[in-house]
Amino acid sequence: MDVNTEYVEVKGSGIHHKGVFAAKFIPKGTRIIEYVGEKLTKAQSDKRADVYLEENEKNPDKNGAVYIFELNKKYDIDGNVPNNPAKYINHSCDPNAETDIIRGKIWVIALRDIEKGEEITYDYCYDLDSWEDHPCRCGSKNCLGYIVGEDHRAKLKKELEKKKRQNKK
Image (cartoon, rainbow, N blue to C red):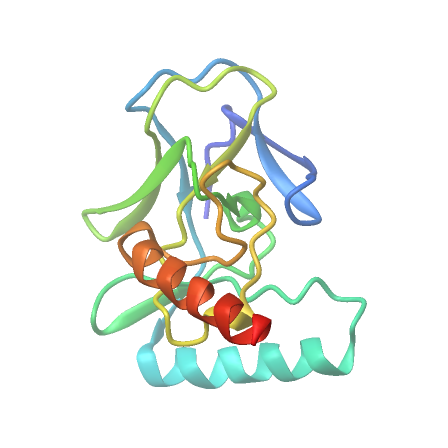
């Protein structure tokens, strides 16, 4: 697995432990880096995720990350491999990149021009199933404090307002 890393460098992040930063100016529309790893069936992926989560619970010093990325309806990619710096790209509610699957490969693509030194982020697009388990630390002005996809944020905002009203009673 040869990954082109000319655009990125991994270093400490204020969002979550490690992050991926622009090593040079990245123009809008650029395929920044491919998200690589081991191709798994959904059943294998579910088992592997359970193992990772169990390990994370036993060792609180770990960062709690599971690097499994959905490839399609049948397969996922386990990005927890040494040559995958893309696994360190953090979520943001105001991302500067997005992911796209092109010819069976997962690419991180610049949504806008990204300046050298800027942290590269994308929306993880989590659903609402277990939103409370995924706190967000991106710090953007439209962040609700939890990692959910943009299409779920209005519903989550209503849910949070409802909880706030209930807690005041």
